Image (tube, rainbow, N blue to C red; front, side, top):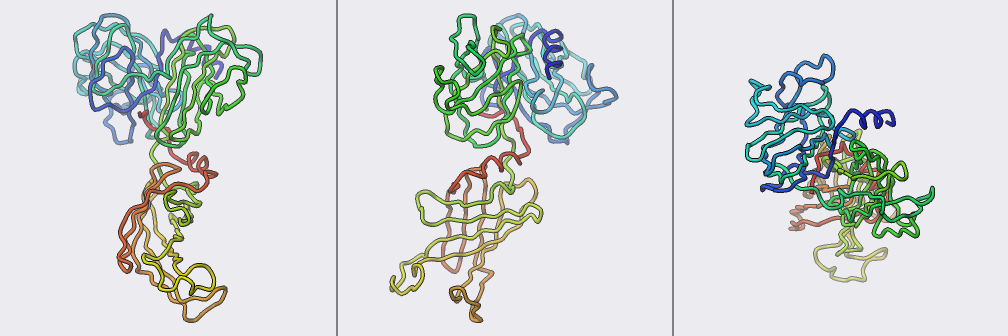
Length: 419
């Protein structure tokens, strides 16, 4: 990686890497924007762009979107996912890209990062092509320049992802003596998981390190609240709703320059063994589910500990436990990569404590449950139990978060950059 850093410093004129998402649903106008998406594996192909992998032949491509700029000048273009996700080459076309004539209107082809001169007024189209053949995956591309960039497919960089580390920046001891740092601001994600964070300031001459702090950063005690230290790129578990303070320093103390960061999502949610454990709804604490995922068999088992729909006639008639306590079990099969599973519910009764009772019965047609996992720490349980005339939905959270990071590590990310 150090060799690659040195090569990038001399071979790439300029590269800008910022946070991105797949589109805003409305036009943005900013001088720093990002485009993002994902290759699914079924995209059309065109002849490989100059600089592609040797003997690549035709490679998959996607249109990143159309855009305009308000001022003429040199604009910086960068492959924001090169260190984390799918490595792409970028081409800018004046007017609309035609796969039948892929070189028509093409102004530039950039691998990694570089600049292109654009004029205010014309409509341009950004096209990305895989650098090499490979597995499906996410990509992200950033564009920055002297004029505002207008696009329906891009959005501006968030404040925490950009900043300048100057010679007059404050100093703190991060373990090897005083270093200058830049407190970039607060990052918060809407979904718990292993997010992919990259520092590619090294392309512009500043090789930076990024530190994430939970809640506050105290320069007098730089080790307090430290969650992760990342050089170049890496994945880090981030909890939804938590404020993370982003602090940047120079990898080589004394270096100054612009900091440029990007953050790709954990990827699509998928059922995995890390979801096993205890789940409940905080509003109804005292009841909940024990969940077990068997990935090799593709099965999910649930034991639901709850209460009757009506109060017992005599609440004191139970010898062990409470007369209103109920538990049901459920089993269902899930497809690889699925985030939701439907389970058939069984109700077992007429048993005796710690005894094999020939009178014990099990009703395997008691209804159904549907579990939908939003991330590694939250889910929704939909239930339909006809014998109890019970239909409804329950938001679920983990009782403890010990398995959250295990779940996040098994997700197929990173995914496209999102809000």
